[in-house]
Image (cartoon, rainbow, N blue to C red; front, top):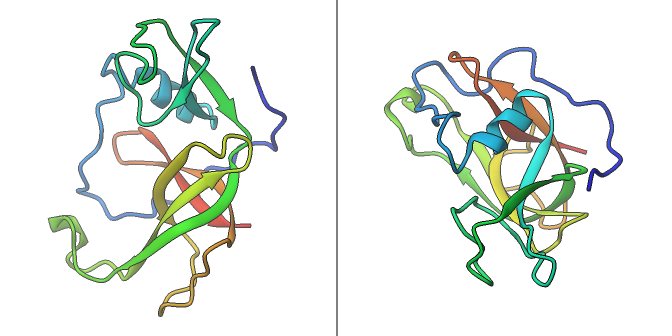
Length: 155
């Protein structure tokens, strides 16, 4: 099932500095997620069993509910609300020593409220002023290795 969504947005330049750890886009469990992100699509795993149909994130080898190995990808519109957030002030990775502060939010998807995704908000207000319930939309960052990863932008 594909949701109606606006044209994808890719950041003009990377948000995070060079040297960050990059996920393996060819990992069998995550490959569909990163293939969709490369096209500017945010997808979530969904069980393909007709009597189950449960969505889950992060991706797993099998369904959390019925243990089926028949998994599919379902596209999200890519909008949501900030469910929780943290302003990162201490470097969580060596490449971030001179970077920050920055905002990481747990986002509840509008069209899949049972799914919450964590990610950096590229234009978030800093200084503790982010609000629970703030509106965000997905954008994509191409890393140095040309892997596309979802990020969030204030809506």
